Length: 283
Image (tube, rainbow, N blue to C red):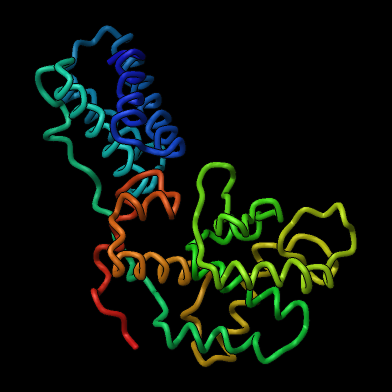
């Protein structure tokens, strides 16, 4: 396992598989960590097979306190890499064949049916304040694009492309939205956002009542309050809207690889959890 092997594998992911830069970078980090461990073990002068080295690597990850999910992901990276090594003729046998991964417990995913979402959306619609109009846009954008809350509150005005009907996330990916949301965003930019704006140099898309960028914690509390008023209890979080987006996309025929790109997952294993969702929405 050399740097040239890793480079060839990463090129394979980029050129042959069409993986995103984010995904390729995640693989690079995992493989660099694994290569460093193997090199350190080999430097001790103790001859071990790659099977034994990789078992030691897995044990080391757990000793370092990595979660079961993170350890499983890193082992999955190793499996994908060595499969490439076999397929490309660089090695004869795959040393990860007998390498076990820790069991990862999966908590049930919460999601909103369309009727529940409409109940949530009805709460800010009862108000006419700039803050309520901002909240409506944030809910609509989350539900329509599946953004992470950190991505949502980090958006700047320039990240919204009304002509192309898409939002740019950290310069890494684009997530499309429909014409209706484009109109809602356009109206927000021309009106409610300006009502909250104190400094024209402020780039943030979503502002608090002091004209500063709305925080992640602030929006969490906003959703919690609306959910309570809508009779949805503690079920609704920003992540709930992300889950709901993923579920709708799968039901409409989007494949897992496309969904992975839309959600910005570095690993397809993160996206596969949505395969377990029921095939029909609960109304």
